[in-house]
Image 1 (spheres, rainbow, N blue to C red):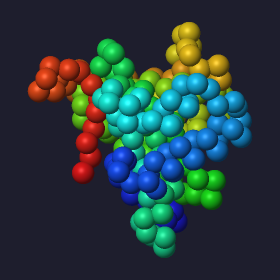
Image 2: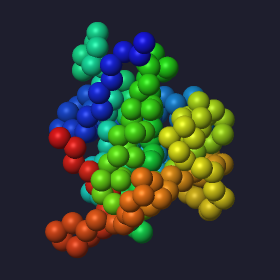
Image 3: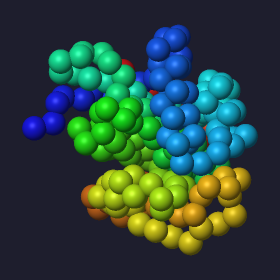
Length: 186
């Protein structure tokens, strides 16, 4: 039986959230690839490069024996057309197999859906087999890979939210008239 996991919003004022977002992502990137310029920007200053552009970051925390321990993280980036991109998903090596990635993915998809995003995109690499399997289990399908600023990306996957649950979706404007997928979970 999986130990309980809770997904909470990233708190930019918490040093442990900032460190976990950076360190968990650097661990998997450095294990399989080379850290790229975009990685550095987003991991070193998520406020300026994710949150300020309408994105959100989620933290998975232990809700069982080690309450509050950070087990994983992911980001939801706002795209110019109102869609969202699932990015920077990382799970602590000791927490893999506990449903942490699934909990993060489901939270990110729910946030995108709540904001009316028509779809969630992601870029990945097929060497990350368990991650690709998770994305497929969440309903993502492979589509042609466009030009990208990530050298490591060799697969693009999309989850079409406009066809899910029979509900048409579209970007939800905020009071300032901007379209985005920013989610403030509380």
